[in-house]
Image 1 (tube, rainbow, N blue to C red):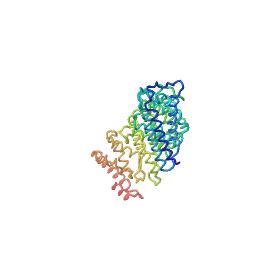
Image 2: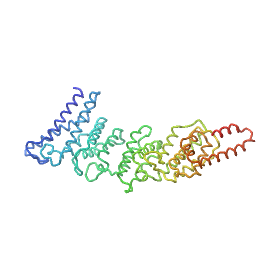
Image 3: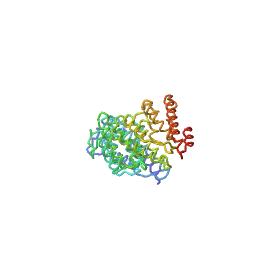
Image 4: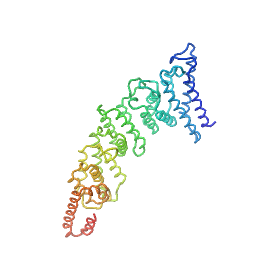
Length: 458
């Protein structure tokens, strides 16, 4: 018998067992969990429930083989989701069915022990069940009821899934965890009102111990999907911690301290910041901290040093430049849902000082001047962010350097929209041309004609 046929049979058995559990019992009302003297009815209910659980175990552990078996898997998955929702939605006062005798055992023990060893197949299929039940949205559990599928999944999370993530989770693990966090909600997962072994961590310790450890073991270049999921969990939990608790910033600083010394810290932070500004923008004000400011200033100094060393050569690292600009734009609130800056105004002033710190001679530069482009973008996004005199200095520098930064879209837009700045820029550049040409005209060996041509063209 093929896997597809076997799954079709298991799907039918699942339906039959569920029907026998919930159908009205001919013996009338039954007191929940009550055993008769011989244990017959209770034992029969347990046997039927075990058949259902065996079908669930089969679904979670039997690998698919070919497209036909995938169809069977899909059918069985739909059956299990539907039946789990039916069992969960039974009214608490429904006593005249076999399921009423064993429902506490079913949710607390039977369901929670069906998964002992997790592999790729069981993780993927458990996620499918969680997502399916979440989509149906009617597990029938009232607040405080400890007999639901949600409580069962919570138990499996702490007792089986998280221990299997040690020392670092796979992408399949993380996808399952995200589905569980969304289905159960963060507050419910970390609710300390019940005793579940092993002891659960608080939201704060889970972030600083578990998630930060997973981040520190990841590589941005090879584990981008996994990193995105870990950061998603981190910010999701931070949102539930609440800014008034005073613990969000220490969690973030702990995470930063683990990342900033890694060789690919820039790539890791770009991934994390992208998740932050596109999905958790409300956290940005709370996450401003000196640790991040210091790192942003360090990257600015490294970027400027690289520009000074390589701008006039063919030694241009386009990927590095793109990563730096992406990091700066994310940090300055130029990406995402709204213009919220993760860095302080003092850090932006420091970026300005770094960008203007070197006296460059006239040149035709092949490399983009990342800090200048960033400043133009900030000014374009918020005209009040940088005063006109400072912006004029930056624009003159870009004009003097030439190259891609002089022709960037943000600068063109600023010059076109600010007549005073445009006039001042023309005046300053004309003065520079006049002064330097006069100084070079009687100097033997100068390329005054070529310089004049490039100045005028620019």
